[in-house]
Image: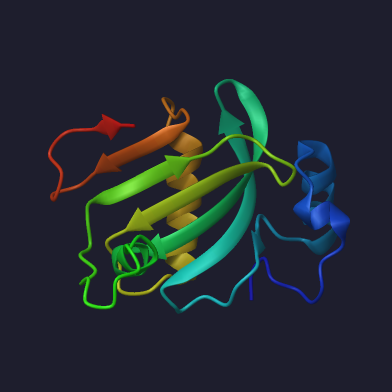
Length: 143
């Protein structure tokens, strides 16, 4: 399974781009997959650029249904409603830059993971906050 191996050593969770890149080279993978694909969400770590600098992305990639469930208010009778697709970027931390990506997919599989990584690497105007897009939300919004 691409990007997945047994227990992971410290470099697998490093925010240091060179240290993490060396780890990826050692395991022969372009990214580190921390959950099994085929479900509604996975955690994946990969390198990219952010505001002109090389970074390690610590990403939670999920379907919109999974995002709606995780965003619920906690009330028993509060129905989860899937919103627009989104990219949400947090502040850099010990494990890199936290990234949450929600797309309108039934499951998160390997092809979807690869496409999402390409999307993040190619997006030139990323900054901290939440970016919503897709048919459910006509304009781009950053909060």
